[in-house]
Image (cartoon, rainbow, N blue to C red; front, side):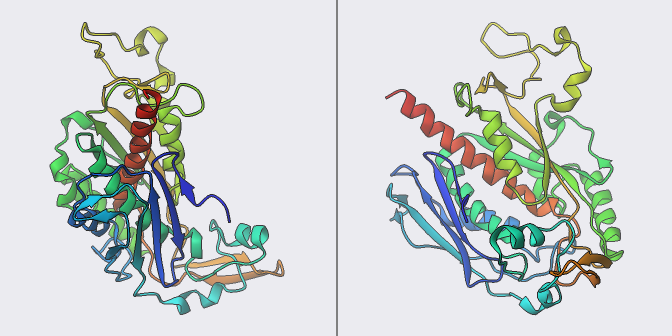
Length: 354
């Protein structure tokens, strides 16, 4: 299986399956001498881990990271950083009913056809549990980036949408509620809605907004490695993501060019920021902001029709512990993938100056 690595110079390779012994990764390219706070890494993992509230999967995993290499006396050594997170609460029997059949909108069918074999326990490599390794690497990238600030939050669940401009929001309130929406009233409405959906044995999708501040001018390469292109690839690599837009996004098509253009201030900043902090594939020093759309979780705890390995129609029912809405736990994943892209581009920018 190819495609287990991400990044060029700041490069992460992950390993492991949802119901295996452990998941983990190797992060290569992190420069030596970066002060590394292990507690901050663990804190990021705690934001993603299951069982943290009534509106997420109740799988109970401590998700404690163990770092095996690349760190000495609290600093990175410049060598590969190897780490692992042991799985301790697998319930593989919850998936025995799909051993010979395929769940709708999952990777089951295509994995079987592509590889001729699949790990049906929780989806194996296709499970969103793999993203815990990304969060570890992203937490390291955040500490390398230092002054660059990355804040993601839930702006929409189903058709319930936060219409406020991100500049009018208090990011310190993101972690004050289980939905991770910085608007308390909307957060409560979203939480109630997710609970109602869960009670129906169903799921719902949503949108995460990410804002990156203090980005230096010059990150991104102008052709195939445009900064927004790599951010798009990073976001679309996350389980359940169906869409990515940055800056004015799809709303920009409603405007004329004379309205959409970002006019300059004398200091090089722009009066508006419909470009989303990126022009010509290169960061311009303004805030980078983008939206990431997540589909409803495919496993619903209701009866459904599907096919088995023989192509026969069969009926089945979802079992196990699953999120009724994935977006609250996906917030730290979006931040982590953003940090990995930016760290990679910081190193690429440095290499261009040598």
